[in-house]
Length: 264
Image (cartoon, rainbow, N blue to C red; front, side, top):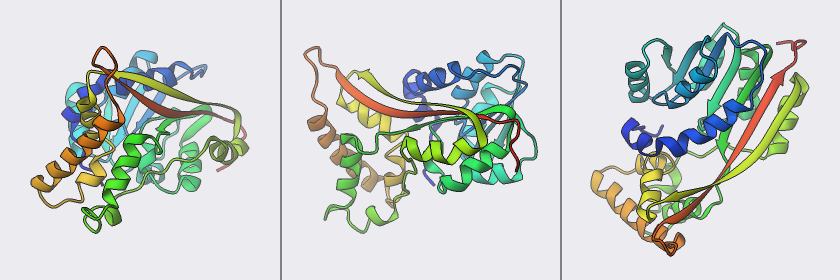
């Protein structure tokens, strides 16, 4: 499992939280009393949800102790659970009006079972709403994989990296439609404006690079991998005339409204 560092992750809090705002803003449930935020990280997504539904009860779930510790310290009034999402879906007995996940389910395998499991934790007429990165084939990700499989790193990185689990929209529709009265689904590509190519490297230090770096045995090796990655990023994302870089990032959104006739 990647080692998550709250301060590194939150260097781009505004950019990382923007899709959360977009997803939460399109959820329409008549009465929201209980909300689960899965993969809550340091609580930035839960903070957005609490502003959307200020009278609701919130439970944040994340399997990274450092993230949960930060969330608990910053927002002590909510419930925080350190647990894997798939394990939570089996162990939890309560139903939630909104089961929400912002950029976390790509780390959870077996979506064919996890999605129905999360719907089982959703109250009738409630929603399962999630957003996952859909940019696995973006230049920055292709660079990570090509480096990991290169002669310089083969055997050290490539065969031990944890994979992403993201499917196309038709997969999620076919999987969820039998249990739902309505599904709202869309992709958005965010063109993030960053100060330079080095900022893209810092972005991925907090997320996509973690599985690669965590396979390496020493800080020296990790820094060597990052330095090589930074060289490639500078070539792939040249500066605009004003010196800044455009960093496109595609994300996939699904809001599944559970039917009141759903049978577990």
